[in-house]
Length: 321
Image (tube, rainbow, N blue to C red):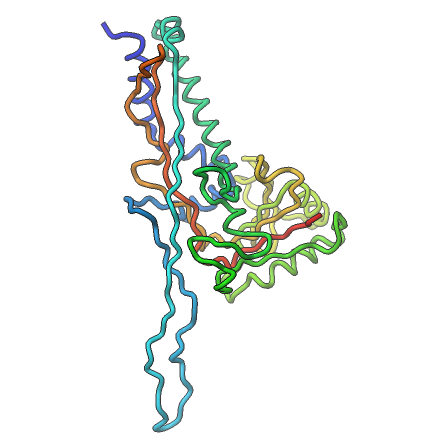
């Protein structure tokens, strides 16, 4: 006869493995940036490697020559490509149950309810905590470098192994609004305009603007009767969803991107990627039994990083104190 422990772990692992994308989908649906990256095919699955390299075009071809007749042409080699290198980060999440819980819920219906509760909690935890990581500066131990690392308030920093203090092509755009706590509905669109212009390169332009609640509220007030919303889908999931020059304007809120952050990211998601290891995408492992505890544990693993291939087309608008 199967023990409650084996029934629990079999149900957990079977359920999670047969719906492996459910946790991933829940994480992406919980975060507006991830929803955008997923919709554009910017969440990549890769096989491994010590680190990942993202090719960058950092200069134009220097052999462009205007000439006449027998003028000498420039056939020199043109060094135009380098790479940003991103390190893997890892996350572990565990669905657990004590021996007491397993024995108390040994009936079939009770065990099903226990598994459902534990699974739902794991999905919610993954969504909330990964959202924090996505907006982080990567300063916590083993944390991915999120938006605050890729897009810095002074435009510089070392990202992907490239020091933008040395290589100015790798600096993101930034703008500090005039004054301190003086922006309002009469000035905010002017600030948006000034932030927008350096981020436009021909057809390249931001397609997503993510604001903290304070700036979003002021921007929304500035639109008044001219308000335009994006698709109903964005509104339904609670991200707001206004428009600015064709870009979706949304808000987000977590401990690394707070209600009063006074910050807005102007993103060109063509150059942003969430890279995941193909074998660690909130993937469940076999059950573990601690030697010194009456319990069972089913681990789930994620491994990856947030990558950017063009920082110059990413920007941040801030109101610094």
